[in-house]
Amino acid sequence: MRKCLFSGVAITEVESRALTGRKAAFIDHPVFSSAAWGSMHPLAFARQANVRRLAADMGWLGTDDVIEAALPTRETLLRFHDPDYVDALAEAVSSGLVSPAARERYAFGTMENPIFPDLFTRAAATVGGSIAAARAALGGMVAFHPAGGTHHGKRDRASGFCYFNDPAFAIATLLDAGAAPVLYLDIDAHHGDGVEQLFAGDMRVRTVSIHEEGRWPHSGLPDSVTPPNAINIAVPRGLNDSELAWIVDGPLADFAHRLAPQSIVITAGADCLAGDPLSAMALSNRAFWNAVTTACTFAPHAVVLGGGGYNPWTVSRGWAGLWACLSGNDPAAPLTVDAAALLASFESDLVDSDEVDPQWLTSIADAPMPGEVRDAVKARTEAAFSALARS
Image (cartoon, rainbow, N blue to C red):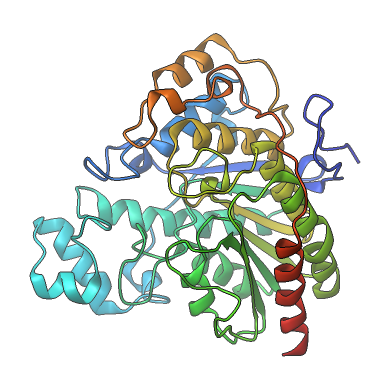
């Protein structure tokens, strides 16, 4: 096996079948390149288009690597979402109007979950993309769907910038094919509450969420009531590379060995990276890549989704570099002229100019950010896995 080394530097040296034994597929849809979210919203920048363009500018992504998602039918959406909610969302997008009653009941038409043109198509395409990713994984590929990872979506309402819950559809597609048990791993800075709720008590699915304490939605905490198939690791602020590696290479790997999952679905939120304005985690993208590629080796079928991420430089570099790892390219390769120009063109209302790290403009790969593995990280991780073993 080839080592997952980034120009000779790695936080952990992992042997990754994701890099050597499976072709990678990049899941996309034209709607992800359209304008969205309006203004004054944390997602009001072209995340998917930036990632795809940066990967292409680096020479890592060609048209043959891309699978275009099909839009799901209404009947498909009803597997995890109530018909009145699906229909109300479609009507609100079509008319551009949201009544006070609909806003109160379904939580859309708000600053958090606005209505904008093509929203229904975009939300549906996240679902179609996750279904396509799961089918690609069943076909022997490792599938990357960066526009996916809308893990807060609830059965009957929008939540946390998420309208439908696309990870649930990836999991269901794998279950339908008999590729169980499914391990769902969520390393977004925010608790993967929607996925946990939709599969609560279904022992064919184990959900593991590594998220920052004190962050919205303020669930998945050590004293929270947890479903019997869920593991929640609420980490303190400033999670560093060494700590994430300790969790993934140790307790999580041991658990995966015992579980022997046939499939893994990963929500790889880039808001866990240092510099994100909506979290206080302190990970380099190298540690992020190592965690995801290591997790891909836990099961023969692997789906990697996006998730949160609100800094255009760290999101684009984090996900483009992740694609490089999954597709067998070197994410520490020097920037091309076009890639450097793209990074230089970014701007953000949430990141002040004096907060822009110079490495965000000069490389894809971050400098490593190792540190002490704190007792709180060890204790919370071990307690979470022990609780599941006792259930």
